Image 1 (cartoon, helix red, strand yellow):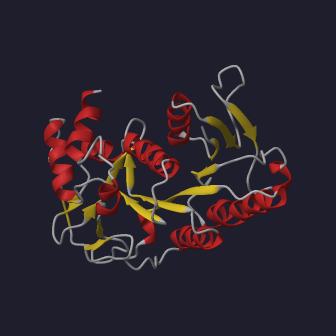
Image 2 (tube, one colour):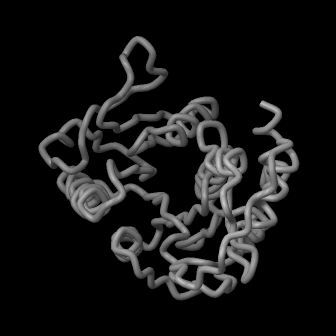
Length: 281
């Protein structure tokens, strides 16, 4: 059994907590606005990680920290609050407690700045142009430098129940670029949870893990292909053709082979299996 702190209990964090509890682990959640105690299935700490004073209740005896935060806004200030101020506050809190838990840090494939449809993996250059992704990348480097056992997991575009952006686009008949290919990389929310549980189990089993894993499904596909297929499945009008846009800041294909060689098997290995389930629901 491991003592686990989940920082940021949104939909993924909540699912993760329930999976870990079912496996016998002790889980504590840290969230700005936790649910009422009567409905909570595990212990919560109500705190904003951007405030060091609010972290006094963080337990000293923690084995693993999952960092799964969602900034309040898509701007520099919001990202700085969690990926710089918040991260440093937590690291300082554990330092004052005299403990050094292992971190599993949920990052994003937005840290890759490639824009020509290149394949990227964990060894590819990660030099994003936008400031929010730069702050995520800075946090990655800080955690990796702080302890060699810390792990960064780079999720691609997450979809699933409540994350149905592409389905809405297909219903609206949004204009989509066809050539040159603009690739979309995805991972189903359930696979996000499964990957995080899998890495913990590998660690507890004594498997030597890498410091970084790309978590994206097996099929990075052109957006035109994906949206056309979704429209057909939902019996909607096919997407309109968008004029070629050469100003895209990010356009890459994510390689997940490191994760798969470790033994992970995707529940939803491609967009068709994942979105069919959503459409049926």
